[in-house]
Length: 301
Image 1 (cartoon, rainbow, N blue to C red):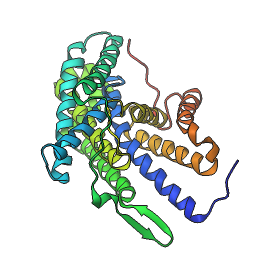
Image 2 (image 1 turned 30 degrees about the horizontal axis):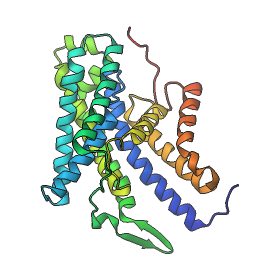
Image 3 (image 1 turned 30 degrees about the vertical axis):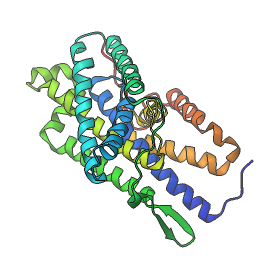
């Protein structure tokens, strides 16, 4: 049954949808960057998301770092983790069949999850709260958590910075060349290993930023915390056109709005909102397999 809405409820839901879409966008970009260059779905990306949350947790609780320093250190550490994962699991298989690389990514994902269980334990931990983000802003009769206002700003700055890097810098030009034609880029003297490592580092750092915002909004950490966000962000990337950064952002916000608006208009279906994400994915694959902003590309065998 569709419920009666007030203006305040609708505005509040729009704000929530924008904040959730911002979360999805930060992680979806990592999926789409790696796929754009390697034509690989990096299944370990959701577990890099999980590891970054533990980085923040231990930097604040054990090393007692102030939250701004802990956040920056965690972003840098997650970038290094992305480089290590690429060098250990993907680089040795550079010339191997694509299925081998895919299996390797699944193996890395399970390895990191089980590593988390053994080292961090399966007991849930509380993401360290930051009072500066938890306070509430009142506009008229509408209440906004400050975090919800910061999320789209952080996402916008990150996306604009990333697009500038890709469009205006030398490494960005190398990334675009590699994504267009891997073999020709190598022949033209581009250091493919450096380009791919940089791509993994940037994607992982953006995932860490998304994980920090996720932890502040949903303060629960455990070794499998990245699975559902990772799946949804992958869906967002596919909806927008995987391999296209702007498409990943569009898909993330569409998915965020769909989830929140289902809960708003039809509360009885709120427990099925995760299922609607997969229904949306199937619909996009049937109607427009390349995604909203994606381009059809022939796969190399």
